[in-house]
Image (tube, rainbow, N blue to C red; front, side, top):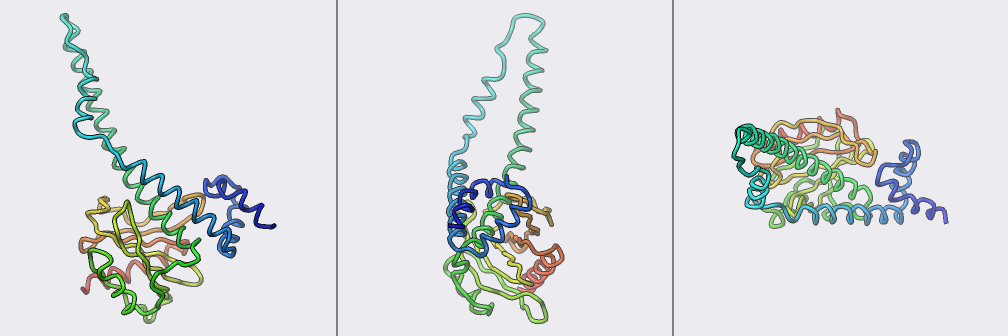
Amino acid sequence: MVCESWKAKVDTYLDGELPDEEMRTFDAHVRSCSSCAADVLTRVQTKRAIQVAGKRFTPTAEFRKQLQQSIVPKPQRDLRLGWATASAAAVILVVGALSSSYLSLSTRDHVFSEIADLHVETLASSSPVDVLSTDRHTVKPWFQGRIPFAFDLPELQNSEFTLLGGRMAYLDQTPGAHLIYDVRKHHISVFVFQERAVNLPASLGKRSLSPNNLTFNMETWSQGGLRYFVIGDANVGDIDDLAKLFKSATSKV
């Protein structure tokens, strides 16, 4: 079967190790082949499950304290004591600063990776939405009682965007809303989560993500206690326009 040759390359595809031209060809094939799309979706879900499991247990403050104490050398009865203590203290300060920076970077990158994976799951899924409707007055009420917050959807009249529907989304087991829009045959995902559940710096703005060599444009911002992500392979202008519609709709609430 033709698909057998594709299925043998799924892992390489998801790891972004295929040549650029072959990546684009594989991407187009996945969008048109339900069998391969289901296979890709299964692999992506497994990847996300492993990521969540790997972050389920984190070192406690007490463990970190014990580790720092084990680094400090025992007192010496000579003139080198002052230098040794100062050096150990300097090492701890540097390690602490680097750890804080790394954890902040790691959290940000982890969130971006999860958002990209959720978007890819949607592209590969045979049932991308739980509520199928172009009417925001149908889609918005569907989320009531399913997520612990309320949000508003923009009016799309006189715009090039079309609402396709919505579904539940989970970011590190935190429930949120996933809206899917279409513009010139490009699917754009809009994710909405509670800000305190995401815990990202306020000023992140626009950026380009390249998970598995699939380039997505993304814009994220915090507004009204909620964290918004707009992501897709549409151009930066389309991402920005949809983000502006959401910002305007939220400011009117």
